[in-house]
Length: 221
Image 1 (tube, helix red, strand yellow):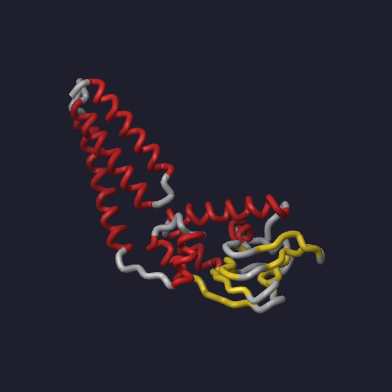
Image 2 (spheres, one colour):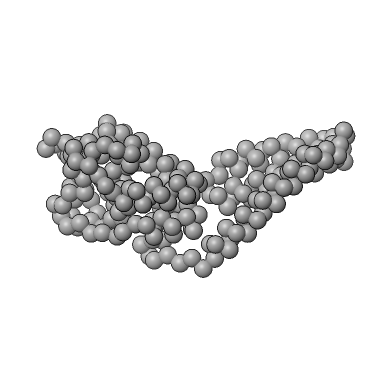
């Protein structure tokens, strides 16, 4: 194999590794990582000073581990069925989660309905749950003044969750009948602690939500 082809293979191997780091979908991440390892095996076998068996051995092990996890993910995702509401949430808010991960997340949540005028959070009071508005509208208030509106796909209480403690910095009141998901904070923490990739994906959602709120209000609830 000529040196030019080897350079291409070597660069592709490292390029796929870099791409795998950018993948939010865990299945795609492992597919790119596997391809990177296989190209690395070819590169280290045909390199003029090779074969480099130590490198080939470990790259083969990494590829095998990823292949096993790929088949496990495909098997786990088979037969998973979401309700119409769950599918909509998965396709919009939670699209960076694997289906099995989203199913785990939904299992520890409760669907709730709040009538017009009810409070999802009260300023200076503790929040024992994290909420996500599925369908409805709510107003964020501080000192009897409206500072923002929340709508479908917005979280309530994510900053308090991330801090691990602390009271709501503003009140959130529904403007009409609002359907939302509610997670008890401790249940959610236990789930995410057992599933690191879910924890990363969830924190990304929180960060994006907080950024959007700061852009409109200068604070979070």
